[in-house]
Structure formats: C-alpha cells, structure tokens
Amino acid sequence: MIAMILAAGRGERMRPLTDHTPKPLLEVGGKALIVWHIENLVAAGIVQLVINHAHLGAQIEASLGDGSRFGAQIRYSAETLALETAGGIAYARPWLNEEPFAVINGDIWCDYDFSRLPEHAANMQARGDLAHLILVDNPPQHPKGDFCLTGNRITSFSTPVAAPNPESLLTFSGIGLYQPALFESIARGSVAPLAPLLRAMIEQGKVSGERHAGLWVDVGTPQRLAELDAKLRKEAHV
Image 1 (cartoon, rainbow, N blue to C red):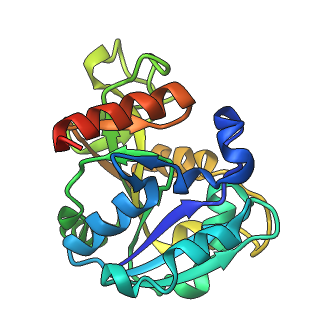
Image 2 (image 1 turned 180 degrees about the horizontal axis):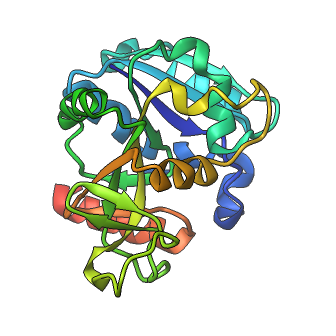
C-alpha cells in the first residue's frame, strides 16, 4: 500500500511559526509532526510514501531526504502553489498506482493504528466503495462535526435522516483511504477541494467509515501545538 502525506498547506493560523518553518516540520514531543506519521506508517508495514509540498517545500525534502533513515521510500510531489486536498492528490496520481491508497493530513497528530488500513482497503474494493474515512469525536473548535456515521456507513448532513443521534455526528480526522477513480474528474494541476467529491460519493452510498476513540489533535494553533508538545513530553518523560 502507498500512503500520501499532505504537507502543502501554508499554515496561516500557525504564524509566525510557519513563516520560516513548514507546518509539518513543527515539533511535538521531540519530533516533527510529519516524522510521527512516517514512523507510525513504517511500523505498520507501509513504507512507500508520497509527500506533497508547496510552502517552504525544499525544507521538507532536506529534512526527510529519501526516507531511508526511517526505513521508508519517499517521493515528493512539488506544487508551485497549494492545490488543496483533492487537487494535490490528483497531481500526485502518477505515484499512487491503481490500488486504494491512504492519505493523511500532515498537520494532525493521531495514535490511529495504520496497520488496519490494508484490511479496510480490501473491504472497500469488495464493496465497491470509493472512500473509507476515519472519524473522531468532535473537538471543542468543531462541535457540529462533519458527517454522520451509522454502523460503518457515512452519511452527510444533507442526507434525509430523522433526528440523527448526536453521538453519530463526528469529525473527519484527516486520515482516509481512497480509490484512484475518485479523482479521475480532476485535471492534473487544477485547484480542487476534497469535500465536494466526498459528499457526492456519500450521497451515492460509496463511502464507509469508522470512529477512532484514541488521541487525535488538529494542530491548528500555536496553543494546541504547545499543549500537545507538553502532553507527549510528559508521557515520554522527556
């Protein structure tokens, strides 16, 4: 399986930290955010990685190299300007093969077990799904969530459901599995968000999901970065 780590964002809410350092290279617990992902993927047996970048991308390549020191094989998809999530994935398609692939936001921290992804990918193919999303409980900054999870199926807010259980309204973690066909309509090099594609496929019943009950942090502000750093250092006795 191939995994793509999204690292092209500017990180406006993290300024001034991101004025001179790309957001995925900001450190928590003594490691860059993106290094946590790489090490966890490799530990799960997923060693073929694609990383896209735009803002200060040369720093990312210089820091991570070809991935060999992590036991990984890294290819880079350099964007002149950030193409948003779906656009970035479509631009990197030449390196993602024709099997389901994983995509992980580079600016989150999560203890999700990546070794589960290959089984989920096989289940996707068997069911004809185009995506599988890992959802988490709604954080304080996003109380309304993104999607409704019923069993292992995801429905959007626009799906007619009678009084959905509030506990089934969850937030997208930024970790997902996708079939290449999901991005066929996106011209390579165009700017395109992911949400419209997902919502269209959800309406067609083509998206599965699961709730991750472990630790997940959207490292979107300097305060959250500092809080996560303190937590990880305390746990590791750093």
